[in-house]
Image (cartoon, rainbow, N blue to C red; front, side):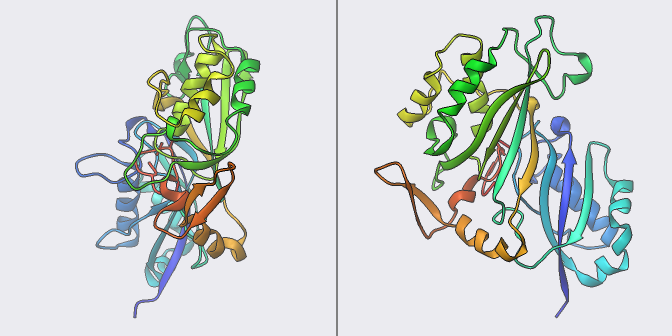
Length: 306
């Protein structure tokens, strides 16, 4: 048998010219570009397949994306210490593999994750976004009141069925635990939303941002986002914010001893009980059904761009 090694990759990219993370025929994707680079540098055919923490949508950026890949030990050992540098020589400038290191066999970039943290940047300067920031900051032409936005965001934190803020996928749960949602000023006219959850379903982060922008500029009252959540159905009044303001910043994992246990927990299908708590039944998918805020955990779809 061929000896294998599991590698963890820490990745960053500008999503503006990518059709999302997931490989698609005829499309330029982050997964496809990195897998092809790995195949070239490690001299593997076919290309190795990456498993990612959060499958981001087209246009979504990342500073803290994580993936794992399993490759022959001999191929990795041959260029062990130089693999990141060699990848830098063949990857395009809008994607970087910042770090590569062996990982325990129990490490699963998708299912072992404890949480994903995204940031969304909005400019409310009436004259528009600084041109050099136009690719990662949304222009909102109305002034935003962050006190109102934070008051509304507090009503969304916790474990809920976020069906009102997700694009439904057949067979996938929309129950998520929102750990953190808050807004702060990065600069005078730049507001940053920090959104962290155990996982996200399709379009969830951008829908949450879209709802809070309407509260911040006064078009909706502070209680409205929580009312939408409680209704449990997608509200056409909630605008999904554009992808380019969103960036995946961090994936948190347990220590090595907790990796396998966390992966097992994530694969369970979650339900909410009648008192608002949660339960779980073993099944396919679970909290990871959409790990990212992207296309398949997708906004990006299975355990993870939002």
